[in-house]
Every structure is written in structure tokens, then in C-alpha cells.
Amino acid sequence: MNTRRGFLKKTALFSSLAGVMGVNSKAFSATGFSNKSNKPIVISTWRHGIPSNKAAWEVLHSGGKAIDAVEAGVKVPEADPKVKSVGFGGYPDRDGRVTLDACIMDENQQCGSVGCLEHIKHPISVARLVMDQTPHVMLVGKGALEFALEKGFKKENLLTPDTLKEWQKMQEEFNRNSSIINIENHDTIGMLALDGNGNLSGSCTTSGLANKLHGRVGDSPIIGAGLFVDNEIGAACATGVGEEVIKQAGSAMVVELMRNGAEPEEACKEIVRRILKTNNGNKNFQVGFLALRKDGKYGAFSLVPGFNYAVYDRDGNRLIDSPFI
Ligand code: ASP
Image 1 (spheres, rainbow, N blue to C red):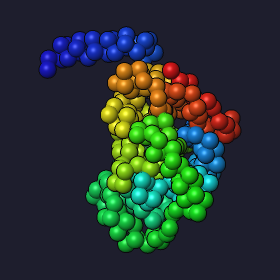
Image 2 (cartoon, rainbow, N blue to C red; image 1 turned 90 degrees about the vertical axis):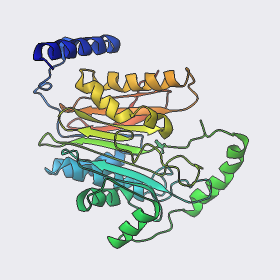
Image 3 (spheres, rainbow, N blue to C red; image 1 turned 60 degrees about the vertical axis):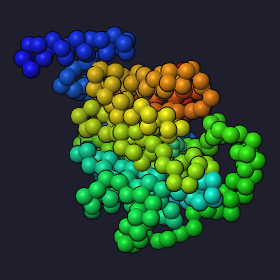
Image 4 (cartoon, rainbow, N blue to C red; image 1 turned 45 degrees about the horizontal axis):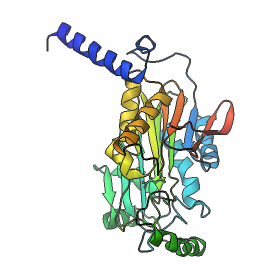
């Protein structure tokens, strides 16, 4: 395309997007963001983000890489049986089977993912090996399990007696509601980190929606939906009803909006707004996004109240309530 026409077209496109977003186009610089970067920093979804951030911060603070921090961080709730939405002790599917989804992405846009993985306590580390040691991005089900066992992971029973008891009690509620909406019992951990060298990475891991159909895979292991990292711009992750996040290519879109000048919170809000529109204004479920920009600025937004996230930077580790529609 002729350069001038191309430039005009791009400018018009950006101006209209900025208009829609209420973004001040002067604030956007195509070359980057503020020189004053808030790094290192790690942010993650929900209350279990606090201990998870702590583990990630240890890596970042000692000069480690963001990719190692986001793997170490989310391994904390994966191993904690009290966290009923991630890893060991996670709620099972309709057939009583614990099936896990996870993905990881680094500053070079390398990524790895596992879907519907059973019997392995740390799906994030299996996803990391998919990234590091195979030419693929995603392994699912039996193949993912075989790969994990081949790599030396231990086969374990992930359904604790405590979770089983709760899940049995919940059956009545599930039977009363034909829809899973609002009894999702989700709380995926998504984690985003910016290391001392200014590189971004992210991870996401979950047992998915409680009582889902066996074989159901949500947004969490899907690059672009549950997680996306673009080292030039920023990173985003999602939590909530995965089907809604997938339909919007949620996390990739949040990053794209930041590329076009939106602040992290504005970018998250716009995708939540799109989800609400697709659902004709129905707010009977939750979705939330978390975003971290290349300069360390972060933000979040959710559909309904209740979503919170943990931030660990030079000001310490704290829990923040997300704004909502
Ligand atoms: N997004 C996850 C899923 O749909 C659920 C969650 O965030 O907890 O599997």
C-alpha cells in the first residue's frame, strides 16, 4: 500500500479506536511507554495470589527471569489442597475426575500448554516442558499425561477426601440448576511478571469449572484467551467463565487494546463490556481480566463485584479489589 495512504488509514483506524475507548491518542507512543518502569513486579488473580506472588518475587528479587517466576509462583496454589480451583484438591468434573488446564508464555512469545490433564499435581511445569522440549504448543488428555509421565512426573490422586465431600454436597445444587452459571466455583490463578531486565512472562493454571462435562477445556490453557504476552506491549490473563473469554479471544484483545493506547484497566474494561454486550446485558456470571503493561503499570476489571488480585512490587505484596461494571 502507498505509504501515505497506509499512514492515513492507520491514523484513522487508531483515532476511531481511541474515540471508542475514550483514549487520549497523545498519551500513546508507538515506540513505548514511560521510561520510569515499575520493575520487577508480579501480579496475580484472587486471594491465593498473595502466597503465589511471594514465591514469584523470590525469583524476581534475586535477579531471576520472569518465566521462572511465573512458574514458581503458580506452583504454590497447585500444591495447596485448600485451594479448590487449582491443581491438587481442585473440584472435579461431573464424573468426579479432576482435570487440569494450564499454560505458560515467555518474552519471546514461546508458549506451552496442557488441557484436560489428570493425575499430575503441577500442570504448569508440564506446560513449561511442552514449551521448552517439544515443537508443539498444546498437549491434551491422555497424550499430555503420557508426556508428563515420560518426563518423570509422578501419577497422583488429585481428589482429596475434603474436596470429594464438598463436591458431593454440591451435587444437589448442580441438579437444581440446569445451567452452570453462577455456581461456577472457579478461581483460576493467572500470573503476570515483569523482571529486572524488563522482560514479561505469564502463566495460568486451573481445575476449571466445577462439575464441567468430562473433556471440557476452558480458556485457561488457550493462548490468547486465558493468557497472552507480547514483550513489546504487555501481558494479560483471565478468570471466570472460560467460554465467554474464549469467544472474545480475551487476553490477546486486552494486549491489543494496550498496543493501541488503552491503559491496562481500560483495556480490561473494554473486553468485559464486549462480553456483557454478547450476553445481552446478563450479569449472572463472572469474568475478570488482569493486565500488566511493559512499563509495569497494571490494571484489572471484572463483570461483577468480588474479583480481586494480588500485586507485589517494591511497595510490597497486597490484595486489590478490581473495579467492575
Ligand atoms: N476460567 C476458568 C475456566 O473457565 C475458570 C476460572 O477462572 O476459575 O476453566
